[in-house]
Length: 88
Image (cartoon, rainbow, N blue to C red; front, top):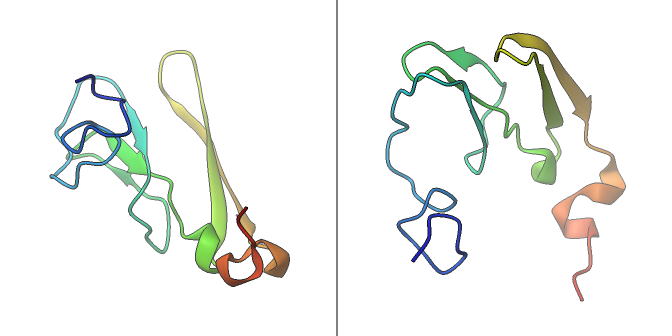
């Protein structure tokens, strides 16, 4: 199966293995943390700052040559919290 298929538990979307260092900047999530911080050891940044649980929604602005230009975080609105959202 392909790396991005939802049913591929070994694919890049669902894996929980350590992030490998690549030459290109990696921007990822799916593992909430308090703050988004660049990690030189993996040449990457985890921008999952736990918006679903009331922390922040974080975005990143990157130049064409993968330079981090800006990191934007915005407090989650109480109506967007998981316990307030109803799924169909």
